[in-house]
Length: 284
Image (cartoon, one colour):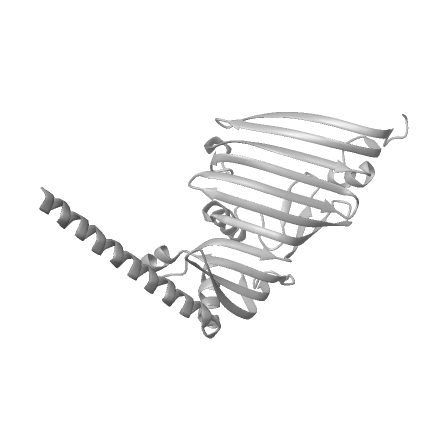
């Protein structure tokens, strides 16, 4: 029996040493490749462009190594939409984490994490309250389908120091600062987002759940939203135009949403200060 244990411990020791050697080789080769990543800028961009409904351009590209995973760092990025007469989306830096095992298995570039900095987005809000992100379409268009699939499969999406220019139903535009973090572990998802308007409003949104959030019947989760504004009149432009009153003052709105088996339950709390309500018809 002792001979058996001696042989087993020897085999385990050899396996451990072999694993450490392979890990050292993997890290060394990875660091070597990421250090020379700039030479592969065109093939990498070509691979990204094959997968997306837009064209990715980058002035420079480099690589870094973090927690046994390679990151591609692209600076001065532009996203162009060839089939649409739109200006390119621009941002200062983007980082993508490569899924090494799946990339080797499929023979194509597989991305696990995306970090975008100083992204400039444009969106439109119509009179019915529907929101459309410029360049990605709405409904079942190619851009919308790609964006939905991307959000469902990405493990982590982080937006930092971004700007959203939102077109309102009355033709005006409102500027927002946007920070967002979306994380996924298996089918469980978490979202943190913060919007700050130049009109003095701050919107905070926290959400978590299990399943597909784009299909309510396949999703169970909860969300919390908090809106704080010093000018309710400025916020009214974000509401449907058929509301028969005009609001002025400051206030805070909190919303709680629970979805279980596709059934939503909404609770709200409103705290207003110096509130002044006036009917749009002028009769009250």
